[in-house]
Image (cartoon, rainbow, N blue to C red; front, side):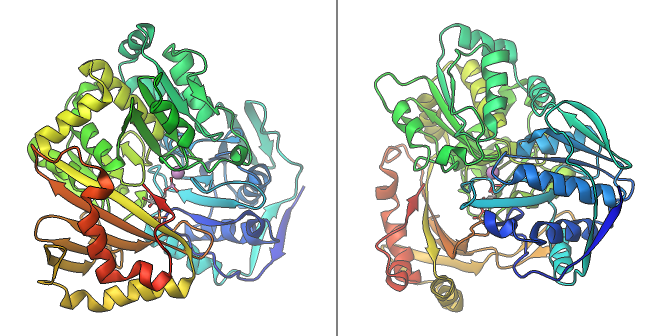
Amino acid sequence: MSILTVATQPIEGQKPGTSGLRKKTRQFMQPHFLENFVQAILDAIGGAAGKTFVLGGDGRYFAPQAAQVILRMCAAQGAARVIVGQNALLSTPAASHLIRLNKTDGGFIMSASHNPGGPDEDFGLKFNMANGGPAPESVTDAIFAATRTITEYRLFEAQNVDLSSIGETMLGPMVVAVVDPVADYADLMETLFDFPALSAMFASGFRMQFDAMCAITGPYATEILEHRLGATPGTVVNGTPLPDFGGMHPDPNPVWAHDLMSAMFSPDAPDFGAASDGDGDRNMVVGRETYVAPSDSLAVLTANAHLAPGYRGGIVGVARSMPTSAAADRVAERLGVASFETPTGWKFFGNLLDAGRVTLCGEESFGTGSDHVREKDGLWAVLLWLNILAERRQSVAEILAAHWRDYGRNYYSRHDYEALPDDVANRIVGGLQARLGELAGQELEGMTVASADDFSYTDPVDGSVSEHQGLRIGFTDGSRFVIRLSGTGTEGATLRLYLERYVAGPDGLDLDVQEALAPVIDAAEALAHIREISGREGPQVIT
Ligand code: VG1
Ligand code: CO
């Protein structure tokens, strides 16, 4: 066995996006593509010598081969130890937990999250830091810079490591420790939530459906909900992770999790429904005939977190991504705790969590989490909801209605225009950007523009600045819309239009969401001309 040094050249397009590098699987499988990127990561973090890493992923196509490459490269560059989930499986939050629990130097997560998997779909890789969180922009910038100057990479010549049996083996001088992907994560959940109360609720006939969408949360949800909490076998559906997610699009929203939606809106609906995404960091929660918008979910969790043992002392603050509705801010204000508005992507929450300035975080894209790890965490959110339901003994619909009566309702929706030609997307965004300065005071649809800017974020902990994080147009009545381009797609450009309108109540809390937002939707079209310029009749996905 020896170390092989392979000559290579920079490959275009290895710039990490909102959450790691995502490409068509076949592109990732091209010669040197994965190796170049892994070498760039190792170089950007100052090498691997003597370090310990975590490795795992959502089980998608190509992950078993990619895991062997990453192991061989770590071994060649002097890493001491890599902790790998059995069969290279780890949900994103479980990987974050293992990084922290074992005080490692970081971890490799093989996933393209909610993007479909398979030879003709998507693959991805991201690197998380020693705090368990996604690499910050300073590091992803350094990774990208390294991909542009790379001349060689090193890997250990060896047989594949057996990742199917738990235990330790050697890869040259490096220890490969294969661990149960679920156990430590499930134990962590037991420290945060009242498992006896949840078991009692299931024992008394409470029914739930959890749709794992043939992705990574299946084994986690089965262990926690069915084995530890005693939910009826069959509570978890689509519970076996498959390399192509069984052809499903593992994005937990009403459009892609349509089976769960129809179950929850049927006459025999269970009490509670939930779904998670490819890598297990997102969640959608649904009550009987009640869809919970992610922004509302964050607000309800913020208002009720103290009902769960892990948060009994109250929370110190809440952070949300800029396009997420302001519903959580209202709760924070009432609680007298801080609230923060960050750019899109979990990497921006890390500093606030590490500095102890926030306890809960959330995004409108079905992501919620807390300071227990440094990633969003789908099952965690589901368990917190269950804990709240067990304590309040009310239905999801009742809890939501009471919340709106109390705080008013932030009507919210996201319209996605997918796979637009790049120049079309840039014309729409560029056009609006050029006119930001002249919008204040304009009247549209009975509303007046109060502010218009291109969101720039100064991290309150380290002072780093992130610019061009989305165009936001606010109206004097508190309504607003935001436009930004996705950083996770692999085909053309996806333009996201985020829409929000606040109704204080007590009237008007039960409107149809799209109807309630109609004036804002029309104002956005009048200012940004999305449909006009793209020639599309409307968005492909509405959530
Ligand atoms: C999307 C979401 C963002 C989320 C990101 C990663 O990014 O909007 O809120 O953090 O996906 O989530 P974008 O750039 O496409 O809007 V996941 O579950 O892919 O790790
Ligand atoms: Co995800």
